[in-house]
Length: 139
Image (cartoon, rainbow, N blue to C red; front, side, top):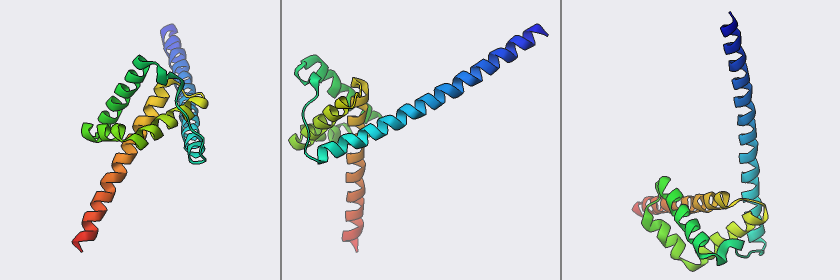
């Protein structure tokens, strides 16, 4: 009987901990999405710069490597990723986005994730437009 009580207590504590962790992570994800939107808005209004880590070659290299790796996981072809990063105005926009996120207290990993997501969104948009153009020009 005592072991049943201990198991029940442990299960109740685990459920409460899981529930609280889930609420915390959902709130954190929502704050991050709001931060990304605010960062884009600040870039559209003309404010932009470079992240503080830009001068550190090792951190810069780690950033770009992680961004490529994250975008590859979301099925963006490596060539498309490299084209995005090699296009000067796109690269500057991505770095400015990372800087705007940094100003909103996004950590290094969150900046990497947001920039990779932006590359994925650009790729998805380009693919949709190519498909629409094919349909349009077939008719």
